[in-house]
Amino acid sequence: MKVLVTGASGFVGRHVCRRLLADGHEVTGMSRRPDGLPEGVSFRAADISTGEGLADAVDGQDAVIHLVGIIRETRSSSFDAVHISGTENVLAAMLATGPRRLLHMSALGARRGAASGYQDSKGRAEQLVRESGLDWTIMRPSLIFGPGDGFCAGTLRDLVRLPPVIPVVGDGSYPFRPVAIEDVVTAFSTALQLPATHGRSFDLVGPAEYTLRELLLLVRQQLGVRKPLVNIPLPLMHLGTRLFSLLPNPPVTRDELLMLLQGSTSDPEPARSTLGLQGIRLESQLAHILAYAASA
Image 1 (tube, one colour):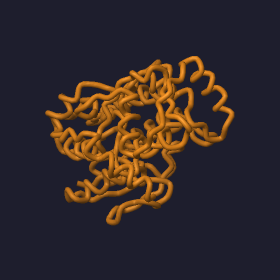
Image 2: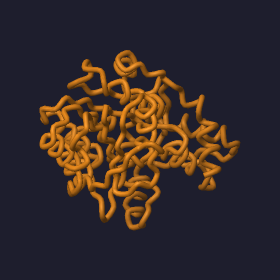
Image 3: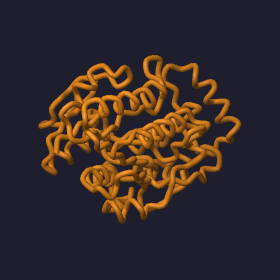
Image 4: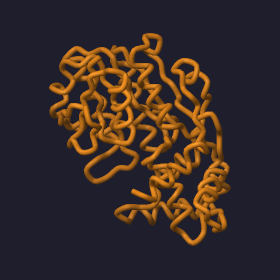
């Protein structure tokens, strides 16, 4: 099958491309630049926000896996431009050139009207996909872990490693079911050729649930750090995000704080039984993830 992957040079995109190649597919990676594309992936330049180059990239493909997304807005990239306009442009290109099969990457907790701009825009993009008339499947992953991720290797590691104490947002009780990149990739690979997944959405979550505090303790233990965990009252956190917004690269944004307080968890069984996920636990990979981050 000829498959176009948008966002192919990103963390998830690189893993998805490698799996598709291993499965025997002909893979084209679409991004603004070819940097980071796995060997064997053809490159097509296009701009998701404007739609420039998209029709040419989509033309002749059998399926599209749409992965492009941002977790933070910048001066040049807004949630609406990337998640809404970008999805509209992908759908328009598919409808104009013929491919019917679409696998769309959303996020757990995505919904219209969410207080978080990220979740709201992802929810509106999901609605566009559902109303497109294409043979769609929506994947809604929780936080994704694996070597080179932005969660364990980034946020959690920095919280444990950098401050003099380990800050815990509020009481740290917010629940998460992080999912392994291998299971995310399996979900896309399996669904690609499984007609039973057409018109369905799948929450991609791991087999174990952790609180934020438990995740920080796991990372602290793995790093061999003895710093105490200190709870930061929520009013102080909200004040901090307002002050952080003045910085060019804030440690946490208001949007990220809102999502953190909601947690990220769901029932793992529907995706596991339909898509054949392994249910990889975080503990089995955490040492490797943190060692990879230290060597990068």
